[in-house]
Image 1 (cartoon, rainbow, N blue to C red):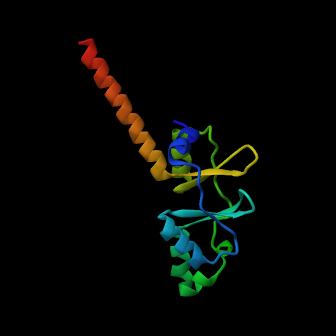
Image 2 (image 1 turned 60 degrees about the vertical axis):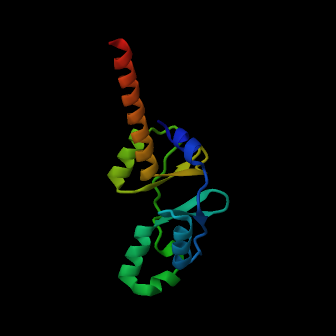
Image 3 (image 1 turned 180 degrees about the vertical axis):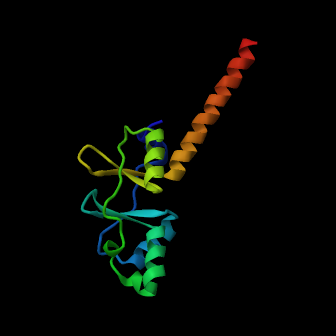
Length: 145
């Protein structure tokens, strides 16, 4: 299963915010959209960073409520791990595990934002593939006996 297939099922919509957005505004956006991360972008699809719920909790834990008034650029991860549509679910799992991340922006050949996948998306599609394979094996066994 490739990233392109995952995106064809879940869609390509990505919630973004400019770097000047406050941490409180991003927290509201995460809650409203029921998502775990927002891509910080400038212009159409130019990734500057990513901020997750974990980043916000860490900032508030260290700095108190004042962290919520800061621009999201102050707490975002600037070195963003990304993937491409041709990447496989195995490659995604390895990358996410190695770097302890839960969200991967998908970029095209021009490094422009083209979608987002989460560990939940990857696990869901992996389980579906395993279930499909098991069903095919059961059908094969039933017809060959």
